[in-house]
Image (cartoon, rainbow, N blue to C red):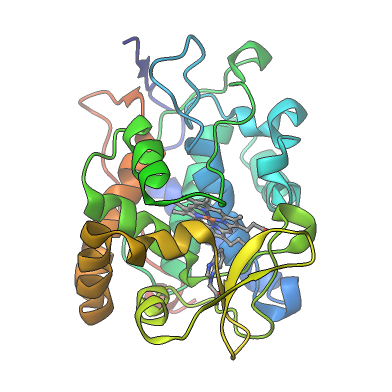
Length: 293
Ligand code: HEM
Ligand SMILES: CC(=O)Cn1cnc2ccccc21
C-alpha cells in the first residue's frame, strides 16, 4: 500500500528540544484545566486521535502524517469532542515556529511531551510529517467505540497493525491519566480520583477494585467502584479476555514492563503509515526536570 515519505525539515535536531520545552511549559501553565488534572491527558489524547484514524485499506489512509486533525472537518468528529481545547493550546507554538514544524509533527510531539512530563517512559520520535490539504482528511468514525468487548478491541487494533495483545493492552494503559467527560463521550467520572501521573495504576485498579456495571446519566453502561473511579466497557474487556488479562497482571506487577511496551507501541502508533528517510534521526527528549527547568 502507498506510504507517505517523510520529508526532511528545516528545524535542526537540537531545535526540537526547544519545541518540546515550549509544549511542556504550556502544560505547566495550564495546570488548572479540568479541576487541576492539567492539560497533559487531553494532549496525549490529541496525539492518539491524530494518529488512530489510520486505515491502510482505505483510499484516504489517515494517520498523523497530514496533520488533518487541524481541519474542523475532522475535529468536529464526535469522537474528537473536547480536543479543540488541546489544539488551541498548541496554536501559539505552531505560529512561533512559523511553518518550520508541521501540524503532524506538532500533534505527535505533544503526545511525547505529555507522556514524559507526566512521569511516563521516554518515547522515541521522528520529524518529517508534511501537512496535507483538506482532501487528505480521513472519513469520520474510524476511532474506537467504548461500548464494546474484547474481540472488538482486538480487531480494532489489528487495523492499526497492532497484532500483539501486549501492544494493545499497553496502549489502553494510557487511561491511567485523565478522565471521561459526559459532555464529550457520554461517560462520566472519576469524581476527584483522576490522575495526571503516568503509572501502571490503571492495571492495578482493574484487578483490585470491585467494579459494578451501572447505566450512567447518558444511558451508557460503565463500571463504577466505591471510590469514584470508573472503567469503560472496553477497559473492562482487558480483564474479561484470558489473554488480555494475563498481560494486565504482568503490567500491574511490573511497571517497567508496561513502560517498555508502551514506549514502542506509542511510537508505532504515531508513525503508522509513514516511511521515514534513512537519514531521519530518532530523537529522545529530556524532561523539564532533567534540564533543571
Ligand atoms: C479501545 C480503545 C479506546 C477507547 C474506546 C477509548 C475511549 C476513550 C473515551 C470514551 C475517553 C473519554 C473522553 C472524554 O469524555 O473526554 C477517553 C479518554 C482518554 N483516552 Fe482513550 N480510548 C481508547 C484508547 C486510548 C489510547 C490508545 C490512548 C493513548 C495512547 C488513549 C488516551 C486517552 C486519554 C489520555 C484520555 C483522557 C483524556 C482527558 O482526560 O481529557 N485512549 N478514551
Ligand atoms: C481513574 C480513572 O477512571 C481512569 N480511567 C479509567 N478509564 C478511563 C478512560 C479514560 C480516561 C481515564 C480512565
